[in-house]
Length: 128
Image 1 (tube, rainbow, N blue to C red):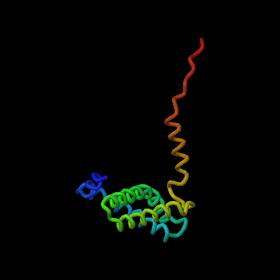
Image 2 (cartoon, one colour):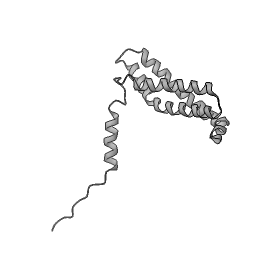
Image 3 (cartoon, rainbow, N blue to C red):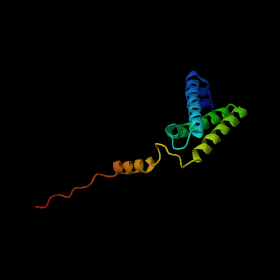
Image 4 (cartoon, rainbow, N blue to C red):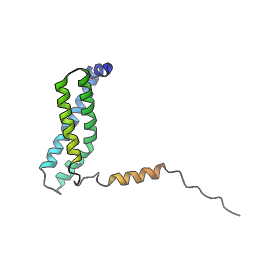
C-alpha cells in the first residue's frame, strides 16, 4: 500500500488521479442535468446515458481515491471521498426507469457474448 501511495504522489499518479476526478465531476454534472431536465426529452436521454456510462468508472475512481487517502491517514479526505462515492452509488441505483441508451443492452450484450463464446456447430459427415 505504501508503494501505491508513493505512486499517487508522483507526477504520473497525480495526472491519473486528476483525470479520474475530472471524470467524476463530469458524471455528477450530467446527473444534475438529468435531474433538472424534462422527462422523456432528448437532453435527459443524453444526460442519463452519459451518467450511466461514467457511473461505474467514477465509483472505482472514488474508491481508489478513498483508499489512497486512507493510506496517508487523511481521514477528512477519506470521509469526503466516501460521501461522493455513496452519492454516486445512490443516484446510480435510484431512478431505474429512466430512458437511456443502455436500457435493454444487457440482454442483447449477453446474447451476443453467448453466441460468440459458444462452440461452432458440428457438421455431420455426409453419408454416402
